[in-house]
Length: 514
Image (cartoon, rainbow, N blue to C red; front, side, top):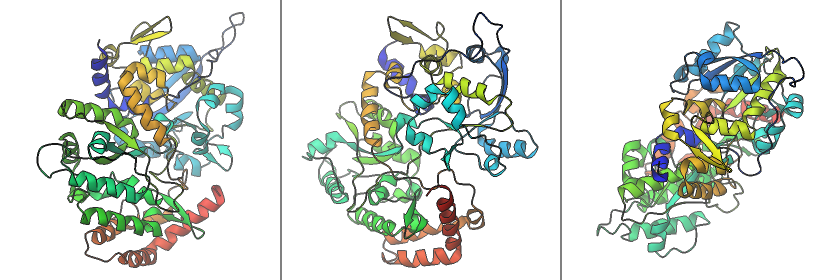
């Protein structure tokens, strides 16, 4: 199968790229499979019950008969009862099962499950990891462990984020447009970025004789512009410390500066004027139509964007790159908010043999385990000769072991060599360049691991998903309200319940994180 064909097939299963990226460089040596030595009586397989989402994939109906699970159980000396729950109702299904007393040994989540945490059902793992998790310690970066640590206690085994990048979104730019416009330096400040967008606006960069270039494009409800806000150290996803309080990004004083900046973009026609109502399909089509100079998106889609433009505009000479998020004066941390993990495994206090669970997860992240997660069964979907791996993606897909396998078992953020086998040299070069940028930026997530706050449930309109801040922001950037209306909005937000939200945030942070 040709490399290009492999890349296209791989990109059609986007979640593999997002969830199977493994840690690069100097992988730790595999530990031996759990169990007694050959000279002793083999230990009986350890029974482990697991709850996990099916991630909307077709998963094995009987894991005991599934070759992938059979191999995993053999290598880790386990007898697994791996229960897949419907992805779209996963959180609710967990609550129902926990409330009925059905708590398994191991639970997959996207953080520290608040129901288990509030009922003191999560087992701290520090000692177990020190004793049984050498690969886990070697392969998972410190910032990832920090994300699942509360008061010094490691509360979960985390999967590193894609590319081992704490900031998951970057600003993409058409470098070929920069070159045509005579822009020789990457923008370092918000003003530099505006000047680049002005050049995009005023130059016929797509060569069609029309003034139809869109310097920057975003989507409805201020989505996919987090790094634009993030130039000022805040965005709608952040929680920032200010004057001794923990504030949502959208009520922080720097958010006012960001709104003024976006209003300038809108007034000067540097952003698509329809962005607040733009749907995904329209947004994507404009980018692929060779109309757009810059946009905000996830790191792992770097090659996807390049590939799409190569196909839709084969003669355009498109060159999609990521740039570091420009920083406003005085801003230390710019970009998107940091999310140091993709998903987590929590060992519950119901587990009869937690050491066996750590050993199993440690094997998954070993050299041997990573190849299993990435490529499946050796001799079936991949082979290795003289250190070179040949992977049959089409068979892996046909056998229906991909993409559910990496979604279920992956624990590492980036393995450049293994990922390169799947996507090819050009794709890995593009991805690696983006990851190197994203690894160096991001706004700390101060409420990582926090429970469900009572005030958030009581005042849903005041949350990030609520309408209050979006209505105020929309009125300001479209000129229906002056910029100083932001101060009135913050005052009203606080009076309508925001003070209670801020107090809960601050109290929890001071007790658990500070």
